[in-house]
Image 1 (cartoon, rainbow, N blue to C red):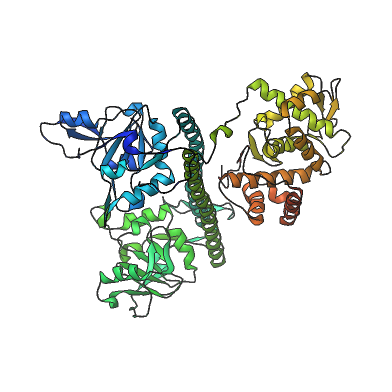
Image 2 (image 1 turned 120 degrees about the vertical axis):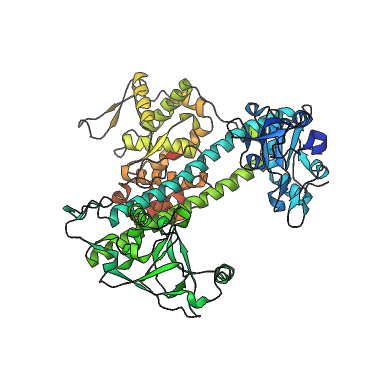
Length: 638
């Protein structure tokens, strides 16, 4: 038996008993006399969980008998049969109905389920689970490249519940992994947007368009038509002078990138040896000193330019220039890496095609550059560096959360197909609009009823307690859609619907005695207090938990309950993202990732006191319930 020992509630059966296994030999070569087909290739399977008609299949050709044997059907599972490493083999993809008629290509195997034994989509998920992945890795044969034989594939054991349970597992995993995948995609877009925002901010800062400079004047240049009135324009050759200081053997070979410029990170031994071996005589390398500008003649048109912060050496393919004016050269590193100036370097480069372009010093020195006052150059460079480093720090956190979500997704699949997770206990609560309104009314009425005669209670407190009732107590039937607003998690539609229904049904009326903008109080109507019977039948044991929550928050004023609800939401969202935030991360999330007003309302000390209080009271999230949606545009974390 190839599978590793697995804790599973269900019997294990080898794949050969569950599916017909066929290894395709149809390659990409178009053979004369063969029929043209759409071919599903290795990469189509490797990079897609589902094989659908949306994939742009390559054309291929096959014999009639090959077409009959290897044409895909809905419900087939295709796996990659070869890999460079054993732990990256047998990657599965499920064939959807829209891809029927496509022919399976070389280096792939088709697993066609036996309907009486296994549901095709369940087999797909089972092959993605950890036990199957490890078993396939053990079955792979090879030294520098690994492959699976048909016997090896057939020997893999699969955890096999009854068909009804298989279908339930498929429905659960389809739903839950789609939610995780959507969140992963959202976070990956955040990383892209963070980079775009940082780059745009740098452009505005280094070109004097950030609004701090006051009046401006025209330059007559298309790529930089206006500059602040107190700036000057000078040619690059008036600010820098080309130098060719010889290299010495003890100088490190510096890393240069079109993304980050010159790095003060020395190349690793292997990387350095590979680079140096291309030019046997290292004396032809050029010395770079701190503050020197250097650019790659062949890649300047892509932005391969930077300023060194250490002594080092660069390839002869680089132009090295020394500042000859009283200037702060890091400012020019940021300036020259903006699109307008990269385009100027491209236009100054000589060559027939892009990959043959060369930017020589004689052309570079003619580029017109802005010259802010020296102290302003330093301020601009520092601000630009802050924008980039801030975006990089946030992107690193987002990327880490993506990896944790991927780990969570993999663990969820394994738990579901081995029976470790009983999906019968994970059924999604479906609530009709009428039921939702009923829960909003009885929960809202209970919160108001318990706060009668409490001078600290009003609409804001009702909003936050409704959120905590759903997120902490678990009253998911409220079905709120909470935004990260200035006063904490807020669903305006929920509040409006709740208040209107409370008045219509004769419980409470919302009143603003001081007019619009004033505090909201709730006046009892004839049925005030008569919600308890419905509350008991609706909530069951959750009613006591709701009352404990209301009692816990009763002495908090509006500002304090806002802090608590916001801290809870930041913490809870992070847990749902697969993170385990410490106090500093939670507090930072409130001050920098929630709403612009939070930093004006609360200090770090205020939030630390509230967070400690929450922990003492057991008001700690479990990573479940509603997520909050971002409303800020600056951080683009939504």
